Length: 175
Image (cartoon, rainbow, N blue to C red; front, side, top):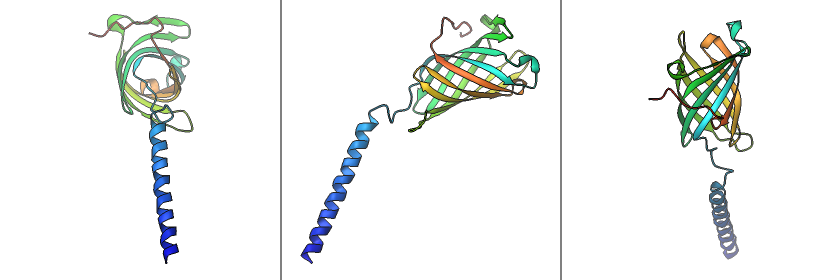
């Protein structure tokens, strides 16, 4: 009987020590980037390229937006302006009132064994009508996100690349 109690006590102590060690390891690693969400707050620009559309004139069109984004946990919010359009080499720069504004909402999903994912949604009041767009992105590094988009504007979809910084672009339409 005494041997059984001794084995039980050793087993309990071993389990408690193992649990405490595991908790300590988790606490230590949670302070390192392995467990942290990517930090996405800041100034970004993104360029989308239309690959599929119901309006063939827009195929290959590239749109550039300038965005201020902030992050609260895994929630993302932001606002931005369309600053440039490249339609088959004809570049149109939008200024002042010609810039359409967007309000962005989305979230980050932390992936531990692959790149973290970001889903963003925004509405835009276009020249002809409002549209709604979704971006599905992978965080490449602290400076870049890449992925695809789908939009109600001309039933379009394509690829998109987000880059941190303005690359010389400036906000004009915010009041």
